[in-house]
Length: 573
Ligand code: HC0
Ligand code: SF4
Image (cartoon, protein in one colour):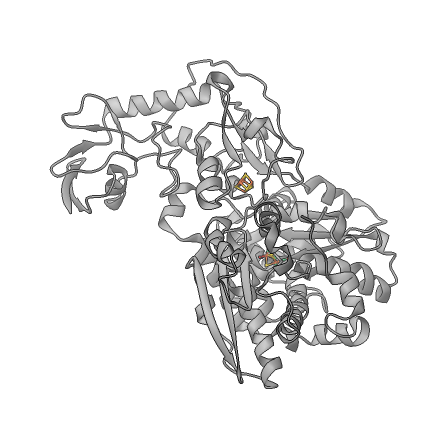
């Protein structure tokens, strides 16, 4: 430990702390912009400058280590002026059209300008018009908004283990972009959107579908159905000022009905359906010598990662489509049939915590009879914008309930949105099938939580099923390497593309860097889902009465002919 003095306050901290960390310990908030704890600590933006007694120049506190007896000042005229000048320099060549910007109201640059009391941007830098890359289905890159903080570069390479983004060109032409100036559409990007989540400005954002969805709602010939992913309810409230981890399921449903959707269904219903298909597929593979370990296939970021970086493992992937795609396929077949609607007139909207789902829904091989399962995907953030645009006072809404049948779900469906949730849901069902009982012990704590690798050996009757759960492609790669080398003797592995699972997907509300430091967003949002699971009377997918009826009246057997036609897919190398 070392003792130092910051703004006349003595503080004792571990000796590997930076000045920034020490200051935050005693409630002194030094401003930062490029800093992301443990991910991007490069001292590039010079917002965190402080004065150190005896040092000639101001120092960047985010990278400067503490030392015994050090005396630091964070709030002198010299410090304030230097920070302000640096910020004005950043602003001088930034496209400052804040009023029409996607991040208006939740931009870290805007907040900082307000906090540091910037009054005029004295320098007029060279403002060039750079090309916006909006060619992919998922992600828009706008170099005009980029402040070169490097957070996205760091997250993509260090957390996701991918490294699609890097600094290109020099001087005023410097940009953050895929190598060789490729479009995001042609780069080996998995569209996880983790770069968007850490972008402090609007340089990276989702390709928006808001207008297409408004148009569909307006169109009298379209029957517009919306479905919501499990994780959306754990985060949408943040768009309206609620604390991280507030569960807003009921208000979300009411808001969707007010927006004018014809039906409001829950992707959780299809998550239960997925468990029926995937659970039986697993048992089949185990009993009939199929390819093991079987790996989950519901995270489209993970699927793209597998296609680009682990093509040898494609045969290990479950052939199940992801739940929201299954839901679309069922809505355009069974639902269309019983309601006498032409499937061509049904417009399915998925609200997802994910940016990769936008690209997934456009995949040719998922189409049934030439029709896409899902016509538009909105992120949680986009839904928040639509609710605001419609002037709905979200926090004052009554709780609503999902429309019947396709809105019915079990607790197992809800927990899909957190890492380990798909695995736990699957075990709840597989264990009942193998024992022929209705087991009471259904909470599998070994697969919950945010450890990088979670493993469990589950004894079911005279069988032992060995499972593993990983999340975030960077952290997953160690286990995937073992699988590739034939050194992992698991039966079933859950992989999610984003660390924490869907609750921290690339389409969820952005959390400022400083808040990310104080709260583990993954944990708080997951709590909301486990809480909802506990409240449900039905907590196993195969006990969902509507799912039972769907098989009886329409699908026949799990993994049967009709299920294969509608609910399963194949992968391309
Ligand atoms: Fe997920 Fe899903 S749980 S991927 O993590 O499986 O995005 O929330 O909707 O489809 O159900 C995301 C979340 C989903 C799907 C479900 C799965
Ligand atoms: Fe990297 Fe994911 Fe962003 Fe693509 S979407 S650039 S893979 S962080």
